[in-house]
Amino acid sequence: MTSRIYIATAHTKSTLLQYEIEFNSFSPMDCVHLENRETFRKLCFDGCTNYEKKWSCPPYSPSFYDISHKWDKLFIIYMRIDTDQFIYIKNDYLKIKAANTILKSRVDKFLRNMAKKWGRYISTGSCRLCKPCKCKSNLPCAHPDDMAYSFEALGINVDALVNMCFQKPLLWYGRHNLPKYTSVVCGLLTNESVSQELFADEYFKIIKY
Image 1 (cartoon, rainbow, N blue to C red):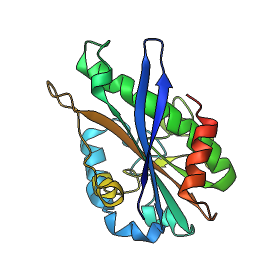
Image 2 (image 1 turned 90 degrees about the vertical axis):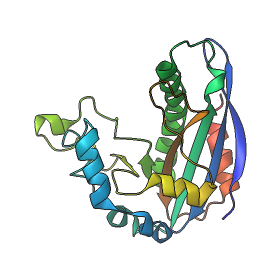
Image 3 (image 1 turned 120 degrees about the vertical axis):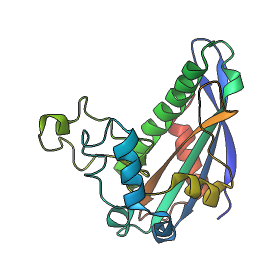
Image 4 (image 1 turned 30 degrees about the vertical axis):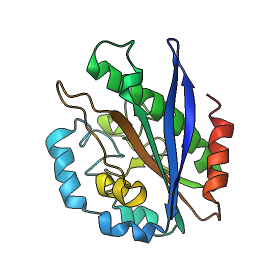
């Protein structure tokens, strides 16, 4: 299904920023072929400090199929913001950090609200409900019904997912290499018959700036 680009604004203490947001939707089963659980578990094991430290992360996270096969529709949300807007920040890494904070805070708020009404949230990263996660104390998850998994934790190749849904490449920050833009990807599993237009309307009702 073709997606539409929406332009949104974010007011910060320093300036007014613009970012893009796109929605796409299809059957979750259309995404199963992008799952490579063992590959992404190994990547998490090799390079992520959350491995074995959060219930939402490998090796505890389920497969994408396990969590999605009971749902009829998957909404994908792709948000991106150009890094050249952050000229008031001198350090390139801090530009990326500020940009991701802006995007993640807004989409987290939106999808937490939508999940209460329509389905299950797939997050932009590891679950952030409890700090620290009860896993670190060898205790059960405090909010098992609200815990959010990321696409990566579920074994999905997010680069391929974004290319399939939006025909855009993910860009990565590297030392001395500030990308033109940074982006976040997340989703909502639902059984509701909701259009992309209504989904976008709900976003702008909840996220006013």
